Length: 273
Length: 156
Image (cartoon, rainbow over all chains, first blue to last red; front, side, top):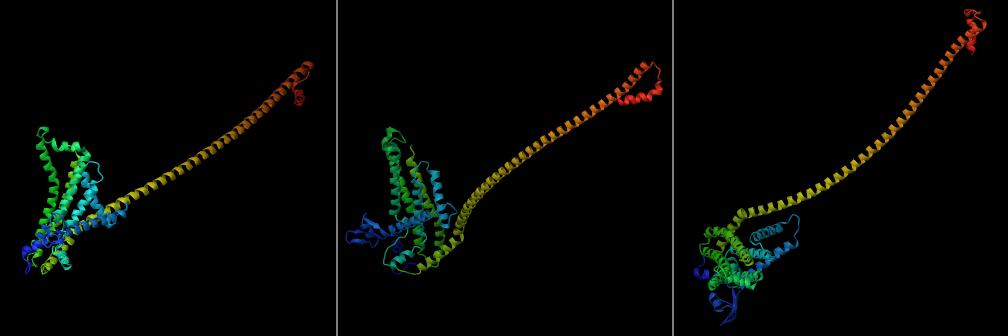
């Protein structure tokens, strides 16, 4: 139990603070000491822990899959190849059942999103104090190990998907078609402003819901783990083990939802209404 | 940041969690993966076996074909031989038959000639006797001179 020099609320706040690097108006360039300093740095600051873990896990994904792809055989697959093939088949099946246009980018995109989000979510299962403890020993004062509990990470991915939605909408339907889609429906040209308002809201809701759904789920999950960590040490497993087991489902499901929604949104971008 | 028993508590929880995964989460996943691998191996095996079977069947068909051709050739040769044999036999039989008929005809001709000679002889005897009778004006006893006449006829 966190006690003594650290109160419960300080403990929680500590665990929910990213390691932020930026230009503080008073102290200049450096790591923020606490959430308040990070907030004072404004927009031009970066969450180093989020970047390190997300990029690291992304590289791990690329390394593993590229290794398998290089040595892939048409014969009986080895264990790793078998595992990778299973994931790719799963993603490919989903893409094929949702996305019916011709676009070679959708399946790799879906695979990357699924595996990457899954890996980032999986960091959730590592006990909440372990990596921050090691980091503290090494002199790093703040560390949030689950990148998807940082809204910057999820919103970043959602923005990338949003850019793709806009790009493919215009590529498939032309600027004219895209504008027509935003203005002339659902109620016809006489209610153009209303249509535009509806469609813009609908369009913006896609990336926002993508980002906030993943962030919210993972943040809440992480929060429960942190709260459980405040219990007496001999009782923690009573709650954290069931929650971790439940989270196996959550992390997979959230990765799957992010992937499926991306495919669906891009399929909608390809469809002409 | 202070380190206390929390970290032990989390270690306990993590150990239990890992144990749970080892017992209930991992086996179904590995089983599914093993199943998939087995299916792939079986599929590849079956394909290979089918290819091999096809190869064998082709070979068998080719050898059957060759055998049949050989058999057909043998049958044709035999038939030719037999035909020649039959022709030869027929020729032989015909020659034999011809010879037989010729011999029989010759024999008959000879017989016929002999018979004609006999008949002629007999008639000559009668004629001679009749001539002699005429000459001798029945003076000669037919019975007494039969021997003489016969002798004469035989000399003819």
